[in-house]
Amino acid sequence: MGKLDNRVAIVTGASSGVGRGVAKVLAQNGAKVCACARRMEKLQELAEEVQAFGGEVLPVACDVMDPAQIHNVVEQCVAHFGGVDILVNLAQGAMTYRPLLEVDDEYALLAFQSGALATLNFMKECFPYLKESGHGRIINTASAAGYDGNEGFGAYGMAKEAIRAVTRTAANEWGPYGITVNVFLPIITTEFFRETQPEALKSLENKTSLKRVGTTEEDCAPLIVFLASDEGSYFTGQSYMVDGGIHKHS
Figure (spheres, rainbow, N blue to C red):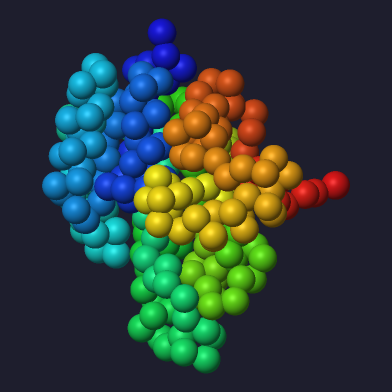
C-alpha cells in the first residue's frame, strides 16, 4: 500500500527537472497523476516511464499563462480520474539572469503570470474538488532566490515571494475546508547540472551543512509525499527549505 493510494494529483511543470521527479515519486507512492507542461512529448515519455512500474500518468499539454488551458487541465483530470486531491504547482518562467535595471514590464509580467498568477489560477480551478475531497492538499514552489534576494533574479524572486504570500492566505481561507496549503523552496541539482557544472556544484556543496546537494527523487519529493498524505494533515501555511542546511533558523 502506498501513502497516496486512491489519491489524484495534478503536477504542473512536469516535463523536466523537479516537476518530473515529483510526478514520478507521487506515482510511485500510489497517486494517479495528471502531469502538465508545454512539451507534450516529454510528458508522454514520463507517462511511459511511470507505466513501466505500474503507475498511471495522464499527460495534458498546458501553457500555464493561459487560464483556458489551466481550466482544460483540471477538466480533463476530473473527467479521467474523477476528482483532484493534490495540486503541486511547479511551473515558472523568467528564470534567467537579468539585473533589475534590465527588467522591463514584459519580463516582469512573464515571471508573475507564469508563476504567481498561474499558481493562483490552478488553486482556484482545483478548489471545488479539493474541498470535496476532504483531504485536499496544495504544495506550491518558491525559491531561495527570492528569499535571499539573489542578484540578477529580481523578477523571478518577486514572483516566487508572491507565491509564498498567496500560500499563507489560502492556508487561512481554505483551512476550514480541510485543505492544507504549503510551499517548499528547493536547492537541489539535476543530473545534467552535476555533469556540466562541476565547479558550481562544488561551490554549492560547500555551502550546505551536509556538504552535498540533494536530488529531487531522494531529497525533495519525500517531503511532497509527506505533505500530500494523511500524515501531513496538521501542517499548513508553512515554507519548507529543502537545502541541506544552507538556511538555518532559530
